Length: 447
Image (tube, rainbow, N blue to C red):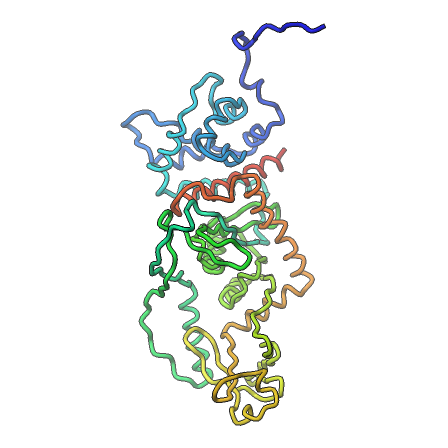
């Protein structure tokens, strides 16, 4: 029999907020696994201790923000609406059942005026990593690094051409020393000292978000982007480093300095690293060897002009330091240039009547030149690692670590697009997403 039920929306009940949160809810697991008390001490120097209106509790504020990133809530305004009606969120942050939730502008104004120029987001991320290490969830033996693009909050049709500085390379001094030593060993005079001027080039700069970079990569969309250069530990897939650059910065530029930062900040002792083909440069390979790491880097087919010999068909002889062409002729050392390449040249008299000259060179003087970097030996040794049984096992884990980390961030944590404009704000977003992923993983593994 169908009965009429009286409305109960206005009825009174004695309830406890504790009883309204399911025991298996994720926020309970996070509350049991992560200690957030450190936040108050981190931000204490950003507040006045004896003047002004009482501030909104910073621990509550950052727990609010983390709720948004953990559960993939798309904006701070939407976050406030969710917390107003979600008892689990209220319980986790520390709000009472009838307590008024602050306005979204409280979050945005604190972020803009108090935290935007500080390193508080980096410190929060670092502290979460340290807590994970304390629980034995990060070993730091195998580190996997890659980058992903984040679409900038900018119209790709609004830009101006400007002269931009090329990203500086941190290995210039070591390269100059290697070039000088190589020229000396080959009986060449040292190169004249050259005034170090910042290298510049004409670039597209967004008028909406000038900090972003116009990215042009094979298989990637064109437009204004940021890049998140992320490192993931191979033990339990925890993120150990996040570094944000404009979208037109090459992956290899910040890599070595970020590895050094993790070793110094967290006292990690990595033994091996896994990277994709974008990091296969002479400087990266040399840096990996200098740090006594076992590097495994993916292979990328080199550019090749149809109808000509591949470079691999020219055999290098370590003893004697020369190349041998497919016809058995010798290409002797000629010089070492300023950017680190050794030049090996053939004898024009021999090449003039060579039957395969058309597959070798079209130079007017019938001379073939092959170049070899002064650090090419490091590249060759690193390249052999990917063919070994150990190297294959290490590289196989790459797609399960850093690539999986990016996939989860984009699918579950609103990571495809930059919420804000300006590299400092985007960096804060990236660090908070990474911290949220680590917090979530720590809570689920401890459950």
